[in-house]
Image 1 (spheres, one colour):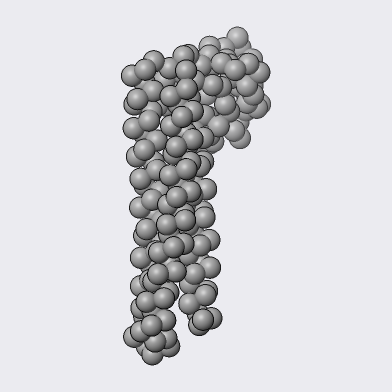
Image 2 (cartoon, helix red, strand yellow; image 1 turned 180 degrees about the horizontal axis):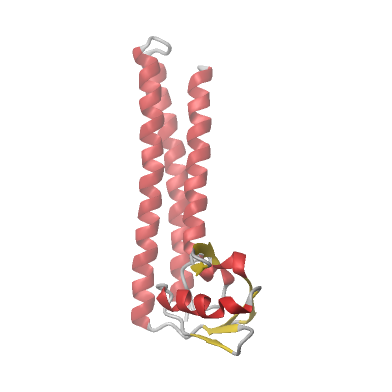
Amino acid sequence: MNEMVEEFFNDGRERMHKAVGACQNEFNTIRTGRASTALLDRISVEYYGTKTPLKQLANMSAPEPRLLVITPYDKSAIKEIEHSIMESELGLNPSNDGSVIRLTIPELTEERRRDLVKVVKGLAENSRVAVRNIRRDVIHEIKKLQKEGEISEDELHWAEDEMQKITDEHVGQVDELLKHKEAEILEV
């Protein structure tokens, strides 16, 4: 096999792997009724005029299955942190005692669970599209090689088939992540 084709395959595999990893990270930020500090990963706080990720401003822990505790490094940031949490799509109401913020994770209603499943399916579809776009880019590059006479028509067809197998493998990984996340959300 042509070395350049192999380089395109490796680049495509690596980019697809990153797309699957990004999908996993997105799934971790979706609430399932259990406390997880990953729920707070997407929250940014207006801190001294700059949007700052919450995890840079506070220590976060989940001491109980339905409780998150946020301990700000700077106590003067409590109000801004509370505001950012309330403005987020998490649907959580923070309470503070002046030094720590507590977030009680409520039970999810059946309707909210169905809504979350729709959100997760949308995220999975975005990841599948990202993987397919990577396949398209790699095949485009390989077709350029064929037009330049670097590889034969047969090698092009073989490369397209191999790239499809790599794509199917990564789409399968996204589907597997979706299946697990869906089961986690629907678990009562």
